Structure formats: C-alpha cells, structure tokens
Image 1 (spheres, rainbow, N blue to C red):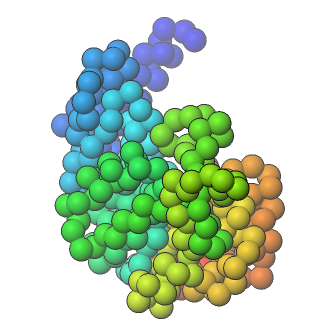
Image 2: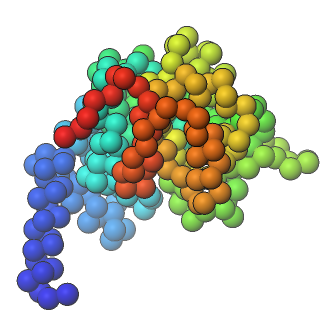
Image 3: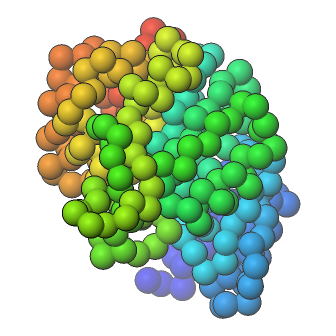
Length: 266
C-alpha cells in the first residue's frame, strides 16, 4: 500500500474512533490499546464511550478490547437503534457486558437480563453492569432448549474469551454451568414480551432454535443474532419462517424486526 494511502487510512481510522467514542475516551482507547498490545498492561483498565453511560472495564491480553471495538467503534448494534421504547432486552452470550451497556444507555427505559456461561466473563459482566443497578439481572448460565448440565469445551472455537462454547455433559462429567431456556427466563421476568433478543452464543443457537422455541418465539418483537455456520443459518431460518419478521443484515448480525414499535434508522 502506498505511504499516502496508509497515512490517509490512519487519519480516517482516528476520525472514526474520535467520532464514535468522543475525544478523551478515543485518545484513552488508543493509548490503552497500544500498551495492551505491547504487554505493558498488567491489570484491568477502564475505557469510556459517549455511547456508554459509565466507563467499562477491559482485561489486558484478552479479547475484551476487540469486543469493545465492535460495539462502540464499529457500532455493530446500531441496527437496533430504531426500536421504540423497548421494555425487556435479553442478552444471550453477554460476554463482559459491552452490548448490554450500549442497550442500557441507548434505551434509558429498558431493563436487561444478561446471560453468560463463562465464570471469568461473568465476573467482568457484573463489574461493568453494576452501575445500572436494578435495571439489570445477570444469570451465570448457558442458553439451551431445556435445563441441562453444560461444560465449557476449550477444544471448540478459537480459545479466546469472546468465543466460549458449551456442550451438554457426557456421562460421568460434572457440569460447569447449568443451562436455562428462554421460556423460563421470560416467565420469571414478569414481562409479556421480549422487546429485543440479542443472541451471540457461538453456535448454541442451533439447539435453542431447534426445540421448545414455539411458545416464547411468538413473544419476541426483535432479534439481533450472530449465526455461526450454515447449519445455524438453516435452523434459524426454519424457526422464523412463518413469523412476520423483516430481515436485514448488519455486519455479522442478522436483524429481525417484527414490531410496530421499530422505526427506520437514518
């Protein structure tokens, strides 16, 4: 790449970061990222965004900084911004809470149930969402089609914190986490509908949308889901085939709008 093109690209990247995060948070993000990449960060640090009401914790030498980039700089979830006055948002695969923080800031009247199976991620999730107090419920659990014992299988995925995959326990295995299902979560929430269902569960969507989904899926107004592989795409498409969702693509996300309370985002 010519030197002029590289320089132009760097300037454009800087402008995008400052525009997305704000000036001071943008400069902090670049500095912390620089130190992290060079192994000079040794404990969690905080970075901010004008799209998050409170600063967020990030672990050094982890995938956290990349997830922060996706949510707050690439604006991966801007596709949901047109939802009007959402009530209940369920975040399946909440990781360390960046998407939940985006939703809680964007929609001051919403409440979020955030579900994450990995204990290390769940610890940071609690830390990041604690300032939102009673607007948040955190479940350290896996999302499945039914209640069952799960283990986190390190041989699956890329091994990083943002790609934790679970599977059902084999005979003789001790569960690391217990799975729950969306029908149970919705019933316990006291809500009539799920305004937004966010799903990023590293392939477990193939199980969630294969069995026992009929009752709760009819009560979901909008879905933002990352589908992992053709099998997951086929299963999900079949599950929503007879439901009145309008489907659009936003980066790695499939956004399904089925609510009259969703307006066009310009």
